[in-house]
Image: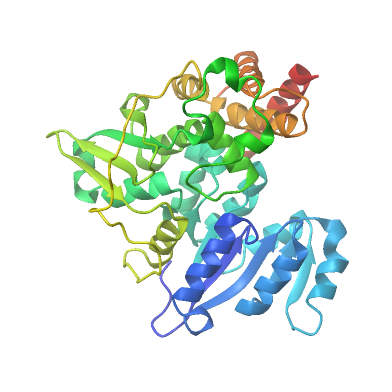
Length: 391
């Protein structure tokens, strides 16, 4: 949604204390801060000190923690600022429903689905960094954005790259979407060695600075698997048109192949602020203080086929795409459950994919979703099944 002439752009950041949220605030700072943007609401979870500091810096009208038990702490941290404090699920939904022009959807996991949906229904442009909205609720979410009247602008570096390389008047000529994957910290490991991977090793991404959930998802390639499902809904392509290629340098962020053999790619240093800035100022481009590529210093750009035996998440994504229905929601919920079990030391690294596959097989009979209630029900059932498999 474009603001009226002469008015500051009103924004909200759902998930402001995570890596995407903090990068978004840095982009806002670079592009004029309070002179250009009016921040109506920021939301976070447990990092109360950071949430309060962010709200004070950008002059937010409202700061919300999803944790009801932290309300008093947040209120105290904002004392004297004039910034309203709130806590809990309903407060989060209220903040997401504010009348803004642009909303950053950066709450990690299924917890971000309802708030992002609320912002979409209100008519805001949605800068989407939350994978679960499209993985779990695909068609329903895209329809909600269209009905609300806003635009859906991807922020994942891969989907942003495709969005930028996709010629709007040539969508009929798209032959394939090529998602690049860094391969993460385990790219060259054998499957036998991967069996003993620790959380510390799995979270150590070689190129990107990300939160724990996304970092471990990169190591297992479940992030890429979810991105495959996202791409289907974002760009309205058939499952067989979606490819994945491993590119360890993370310079080519993704590509679009056309029927004439041309391939358009978007390149850049691995810095999420580029994609965030593009989403914030779309369709314009604004100057950002990010690293520029020096092609004379780039010694090589490597590409290789992914190994779906070592990284079965990619195969499971294809299964989910082929089955359709609520398999994306089941896959996502089971993966979140398995992730938490791995982080807590209850299962080993490779067992995450085993849990997800078994849950998907057990719930392959679920019919297509006709409402968001169907999505939430499938999510709950998948978590129950996955938890039972973990024991």
